[in-house]
Length: 332
Image (cartoon, rainbow, N blue to C red; front, top):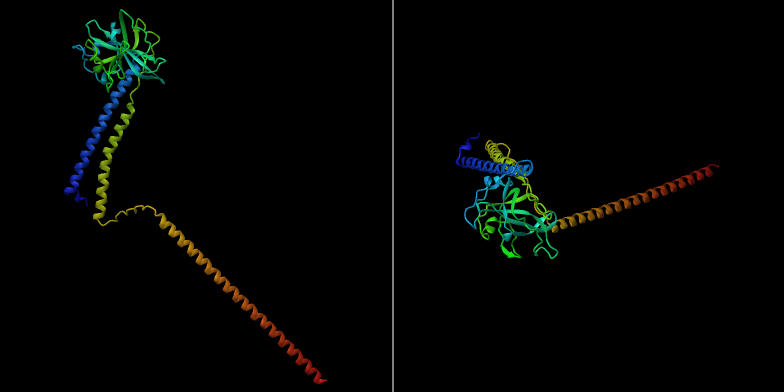
C-alpha cells in the first residue's frame, strides 16, 4: 500500500523533511542557548547587591596600546560586579547626551579612571538632568573627586552604533557610549567595557541619579526555542498526512472533497438577482389577483342563477295556486 514511498519523488520529499527538521531543531537549540545567556545576565543583575565584587583586572583583559580599547568581554561577563581603584581624569570627561531616566532626558557623565599601571577604565558616574537651556546645552556636573578613588559597579558592554565625538565646553560630547570610538580620543589604553557605578569611596555626589539596569527578555528566546521544536515535529506530521492521503487515493478510497473556492461577490449580479425575484413576486401577486377576480365573478354568476331559480320556483308556485283556485270554482 505504501510502496510508492520508495519512488524518487517520495524519497526526495523524505530527505527534504529530515533536513528541514534538523535545521529547525538546531535553530531551537540556538534560541535555547540565547535564553540561557540572557537568564544568566538577569541573574547577575539581580544578584549584584548580594555577591562580593571582584577586581576588575580579574574580569577584563588589560589594554596595551594607547588610544585603543582592550578586548570586548562578551555577554557572558556583562553586569558582573567589579571593584577598581585609581584617579579620575576630569580633563577627558565625557558627556553622553539624550539619555533618558524615567521620563526625563538628560546626560550620563562618564569619567576615565586611571589605574596604577597607566591603563584606564571608563566609569559612568550617573545621570544628571538637562539644563534649562535644553538637551543640547552642556549640563552642570559635580566635579569628580580628587585623589585616589575606589569604585564598585557593574560591567557594561560597549554600546553599538557609535556616534560622532566632539569637544564641547571642556568635555567629549557624544550620543552613544562606544568604547572603541571614545578610546581613539583618549591618550591612554582603555579597557574594552565600561563600569556603571553603584558605590564610590569617597561617596558620589547626590546630584547624580543611578542609571537603572534593564533586564534581558530571556523568555522571548525560550518561546522561540519551543516554536522551532514544534515546527520540527510538524514537518513529519505533514509528510505522514500526505503519504496517507496518496495511499488512500491509490487504493480507490474516496478522495477528499475540496472546498469550493469562495468567489468574490458581484454586486451587479446580486442586484439583477434581486430585481428578478421582485418581478417574479409582482407577477405572482398579479396572477393571484386575477384568479381571485375570476372566483368572485363565478360566485356572482352562481348567485344570479340561484336567484333566477328562486324566481322561477315562486312563479310555478303562483301558477299552481291559481290552478287550484280555478278547480275549486268549477266544482262549486
